[in-house]
Image 1 (tube, one colour):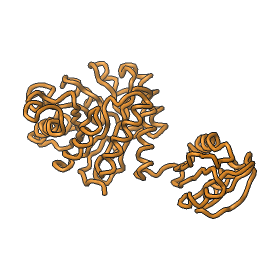
Image 2 (spheres, rainbow, N blue to C red):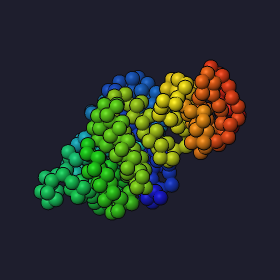
Image 3 (cartoon, rainbow, N blue to C red):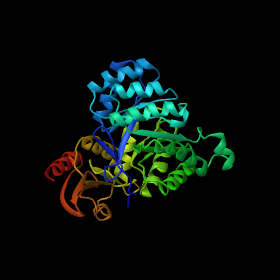
Image 4 (cartoon, helix red, strand yellow):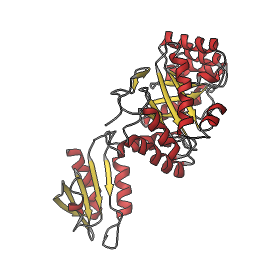
Amino acid sequence: MRNNTRKIYYGDVGVGGDAPITVQSMTNTDTRDIKKTVEQIKSLEEIGCDIIRVAVLDMDAAKAIKHIKKEIQIPLIADIHFDYRLAIESVKNGVDGLRINPGNIGSRDRVEKVVKICKEYGVPIRIGVNSGSISKEYLQKYGGVNEDSMVESALEHVRILEDMDFHDIVISLKATDIHLTVNSYKKISELVDYPLHLGITESGTEWRGTIKSSIGVGAILLMGIGDTMRISLTGDPIEEVKVGKQILRSLGLLKDKIEIISCPTCGRTQIDLINLAKEVERRVENINKPIKLAIMGCAVNGPGEAREADLGIAGGIGSGLIFKKGKIVKKVREEDLIDELISEINKL
């Protein structure tokens, strides 16, 4: 059962409440380079990115938002560090959300100016706390970096906004340590009803970071916690979106494509199952049907072991079986297996 959080909107995309869990990414282009930034965002849109974030380093970057927004379809969030004027300029130029920590932008007067314009334009604020940004006060009070100091740091920023009657808030509590991240999200989910943005910060390169993020984010989602996420990888942002979407599919939280299950192979396998599975995966990548597909190496046990699959193939010597819900439909030559499988998929 997913936690019931309040719902906010980035543009027309809901986050929290009954809205689907969204997958975000962040551009690694210079935001001032409008052409390259738009090109990257469009490539991310094509693979299903729901929300995009850009770094706003200066006024030129803030003003570029106006031009970028005209060319893209998904909501855009401005990532601001310290300078409240960049936040104000970003909102004026049409940004759909801010990522900023109120406690880090100076005096109350400055925060009030940001809050005022966010109220006027209907722009939410994400408070982003990570294990490296905890104030010394809370490190001393709670004995170092732990879920208590993480959560208290986030709540300090929340209180600043609440005191100004601002409640369109999203919270993130990211750490590089999986245990700390999971415990922090669990704790804060019991204290507030604001939407939570999930992630393992600085998780690593594509291979290591994918594993680390899948474990951490997956564990949090399994507790029913989380409304949006970014998988932070040292690599192409496209991989972040692919991993995020696949985590949701693996947990049954997103049913937009074919789910493939395949056996790990063993000495009984009499067919080139590894390449067969890879080719099936490639051929069905753009088929948007919420069905389960099984690629099994053993014609004797395959159909029975994968009877929960809507459709599947089981290999033999030079041939294979096509089955539906564990029942054999037909026997075909090995070279025709994939084409016949695609034909059966198209019939569903």
